[in-house]
Image 1 (tube, one colour):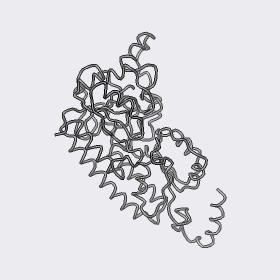
Image 2 (tube, helix red, strand yellow):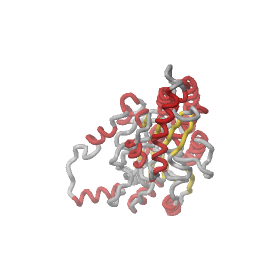
Image 3 (tube, helix red, strand yellow):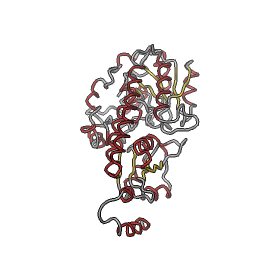
Image 4 (cartoon, helix red, strand yellow):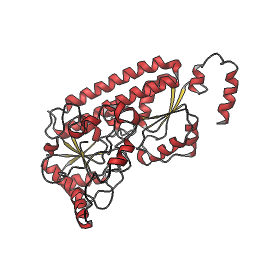
Length: 381
């Protein structure tokens, strides 16, 4: 991956009442479970909420566990939210992003549970660190394909939802540690960590599973939309036709977004961009770019001095003039790096939630704003 960084009593009573008049078949109210006949969906955070609302339209009632402006990675589930989840007809979440949600879903007895990561492909071990990061050498040599397909050894890990999902954790357990290399003496290992930007802390090379930020790749996000549409049709068959039409319409919008990114980032001055944390690895892979992040997959981790120095060298070598920060995470480190290196700052939004600060009212609009920001920072022609 082209990211270089260090890395239920009321329900029983209702059923008894409905049973007298519904012996001949399953009504939409039965399928949906709600008193208003709507499919009750609990979404873990905004990108899941957006899909459910766009596909469900007026047939669904969507509740999100992560409030607007709340950083999703550190979400804690309240007792009220847990109870509401139990009453849901469908729970939609993204495994690996929010540990508290993963645990709550595992313990939940909700009727249908949909893990978005099983509907597309993921990188097994998340973004891989590049030894050349901060070496002073331009990163053009690590430049991936701009064809819209991932480059190099990861090419066959993308776009094959039927092959790639559902086994990421097992693959990682077998392949993610050691890779057959000889164990280094303590002194050499420490020196290697310093060269890569480690200071004894984990700066994002997650050992807990693959990179979960799939929604920032419009192609993968469209795959998730297709899978969710089928799951919703199965959960609420009376409205399956509407869910199918809405899914098709959403996928067309996401395909159009992909086309805009593909054309807008095809010819740029540099292919490298610097971000606060490694949220944009799938986007970088898709459009032939390289993400350099200050921290890793965890937006709250602290970078080492070696990492900051490496980024300053990379910015100079690769003609980077912008450090991107996010709306839901502190911009302190990003602005410090920019000031020290004489760079400007701008927002690249990982679209984890929509707030008054968002440059758009929904996922597509914010992603279009991200494209504009990237084109400016990369010197698109």
